[in-house]
Length: 194
Image (tube, rainbow, N blue to C red; front, side):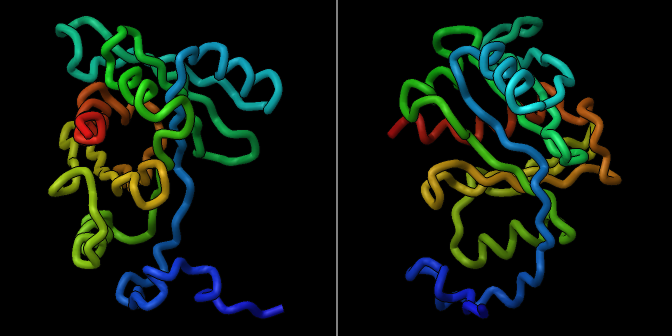
């Protein structure tokens, strides 16, 4: 059965010419959940879904003094998916950005992240050219580790879509630092002001 792609495309976008983007060869990198009890959610994923625990990571998103932490991430590997992760985030203080998001939008998916065969700067510029809104005016570039990333605004699909470019396809979790995590999460603060 051959069904044309346009039958599944939302009316507002069915006439867009996306040929200049080309085949982005998207690959799921990770998805992020914002929850009140990250340990409980991680344990469910591990015990009942077969996810592999990799590590816990404390993060300072800028909501506390240096040397303190306002967010914890449980990083899990998705079963049967090499280099694909689930990141479960919990706010550690009442007014953390994670808890404020949960208060406003509820627990659940915050973002889904993709890698691509196309340079992230090209993807960013093409989306900007098409009028697709992002949370930043440019790609976030952590020059210390070589990680590049940006979010597409959540109003398109109900959660943020992240594009991520890892240096030399490095899937080591050390690539995520408090600095690049804070830069990306803080780019979403305007959603908390509405």
